[in-house]
Length: 251
Image (cartoon, rainbow, N blue to C red; front, top):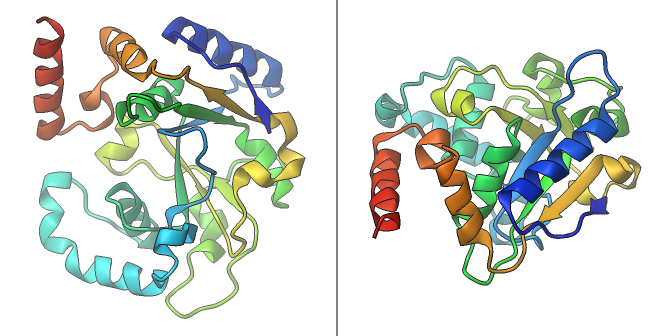
């Protein structure tokens, strides 16, 4: 894992992302690293189900409960799950603890997620990862995986044999949130080890911190560049938030 010097502006962040991309460019097609924004640079890359505050939850029970109770609430999402993976992604996006970590192919969206909920004195961060290297470290080879290739990570209730290490997978983009957020995911196996502690990733995992107290400034710069709540959550409640932010900014 590599740490960069904290950035103090949107332009400095974009420069850092472009430099990382150029250094990692090693494929026959345009290389796009995966990015994840977090409100605190101290947070590790470990999914919610493995965090101490959620350690008492049983994942099989959560999956079963969510699936049988969520039906009446699906209308506003505009999405009808077609398989267990769709249900699992839906759980993740609506706050149920899972073994998933959200990533995006948009560095600007990742930066927005980092600063949108950061406190005044916080030091947010964006993690930048080469997903091919993660899968190679977990024994899958230098490739990206789809849900069919990682079915062992989401077995039927009660079935054992989940792999140990994490995997990087590209979901089928069947929900509006997945499309809007340019979503990708990593999924942990049975090993409760943060991705930032995988030594073989080396410099293919980079942490870009936002300078202390600069989250509001960079959030405003993103807003001026068209990245806002409606960009990542295309819903009416997001439109309300964007309108209020806009008119507050004009005062």
